Length: 219
Image 1 (cartoon, rainbow, N blue to C red):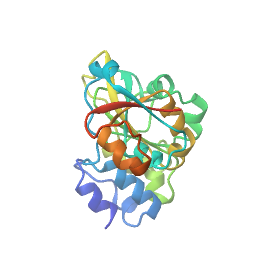
Image 2 (spheres, rainbow, N blue to C red; image 1 turned 180 degrees about the horizontal axis):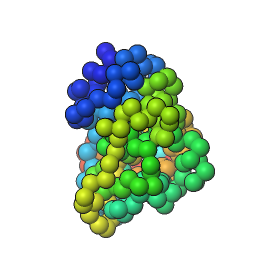
Image 3 (cartoon, one colour; image 1 turned 30 degrees about the vertical axis):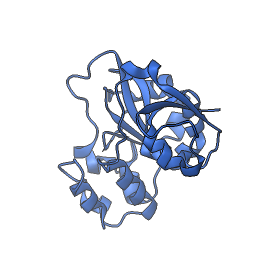
Image 4 (tube, rainbow, N blue to C red; image 1 turned 90 degrees about the vertical axis):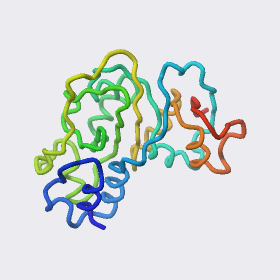
């Protein structure tokens, strides 16, 4: 299966230049395929119920954490923030880390280049990865020499991003999940309980139910 097939069966109407996607690196293929899989979105309720959520804790480094982060966790933000503002203020990632390590950014399955311009809104899906290998990985990375090849599918601002508190689904891949995933979970994230059970299996907290959302933290 090629990335051209994957893009055709995503919500995107135009795939990037065929040169980028005909023979992708396997690692880049897997991550890009996971990012743009529109069926791979966790079910999250609105942030208005945030304080009513049951708090569930897991030990740092629990097996299944990376899988959970790849599926996506809910993080609160403010409508109209730029992607960079959200990453600094709401995830706790340092400006230096964002610039040097987070080199692949997708917003709602579309690659984002200028993270100072693209704004977020309620319900957005933000996927973060380190630099991906191969031509496809370079093309999907932000501000690379060949990213203009896929300009037609790049993330763009919508006219109305709303206002007030919002909830984003944040997905972390490869080294990003391993390096700063625990930091994100320390502040607490909103996750569907069923997803927690699937990701952690026998390591899931005993007190968690199989329905509804929880506030998940690492201790």
